[in-house]
Image 1 (cartoon, rainbow, N blue to C red):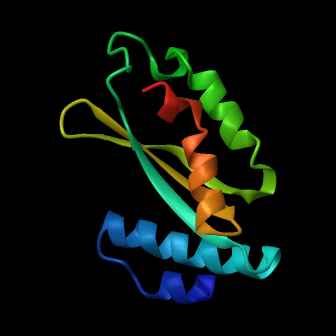
Image 2 (image 1 turned 90 degrees about the vertical axis):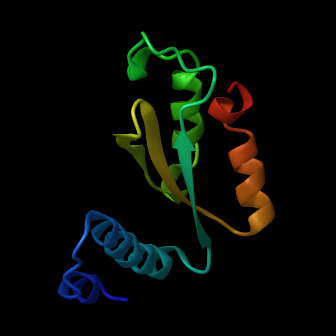
Image 3 (image 1 turned 60 degrees about the horizontal axis):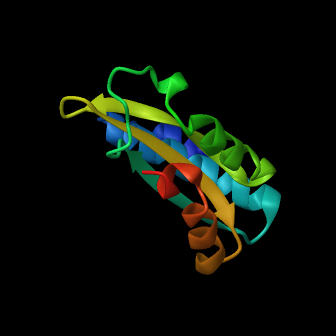
Length: 116
């Protein structure tokens, strides 16, 4: 899908707009990087989250960010999505990996997932 195709689809909701943007981005990333597969993950606040501490000051966040940055050009997009359903914070990660095993291994090594 070309970026112009995604835009001309005129999405009617934020969800459709996000999906159209990701589809356009995925096509351009694949063309630039070759046959790497694209993976995504949705993070949500876990039991270790400290409600009275700002997101930037959460324990372990620095290691989580460094882990993402270590992907280098394989990192497509990452960051907070929204606060939904009360206080639940969600974040999106889109990255490239050569196969499912590599993608899962990298995700399992994320300090945010290991530490709660």
